[in-house]
Image 1 (cartoon, protein in one colour):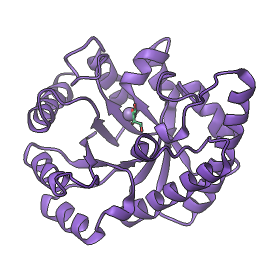
Image 2: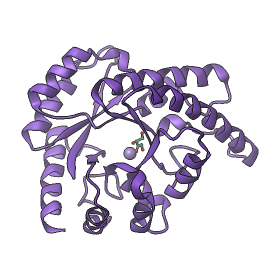
Image 3: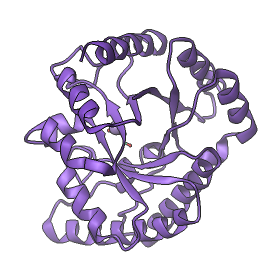
Image 4: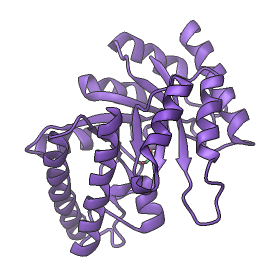
Length: 270
Ligand code: LER
Ligand code: MN
């Protein structure tokens, strides 16, 4: 199992434009094997700069997140408004092209969108729109080296696919199977009857894992049983990345190094 950490690329006008590059440097210095980039719009990134940074730090890019395109630009793959949906699909295609350059996977999480009216019929319409968007993205991804990852996300953050069972059923509906599963301990702690059973149910589709504790802080600061999580991953032969995705307390450096130490202990003792 390999260690990674989420770094958001802040492309807002008055942001510190190079902070994410310094963060990648720092992750390498405290023992991470990979970085997961949260990208609102991949067109804001200079590929040659990123390639140089990854090579210099000897670190890989296992996955990229798309949630900022929903949170900051309101793009949603399930939007009833065809214009918004088309923009969301076009944006995720940019993420796929970007991931193709690095052999990474694209996370389909918050970009699934949130239904304002939670009525059954509007949810049904939303899931149909999501299915259409995903079919188009799968066909697009088929021609690339990029993978797609469906992330079960708790009901308060997205309206669709809150748990592993729902994600697996959704994948079965897709004509084209370019989609695998990922697992986020924070969401699973809210939505699953039994977190370890749910993890097991991912089976061979599991290609990426997010770690955050029950309070969305660094593992070890809440009440999720990470020893059992690691034992279960080891038993299943999981070889991919565990990526830290949680609030910084107090800042990026201390939080990421705390996580690196925590995972080192867990890998040795579990
Ligand atoms: C959001 O809660 C989350 O877990 C992200 O990975 C979604 O893209
Ligand atoms: Mn996550």
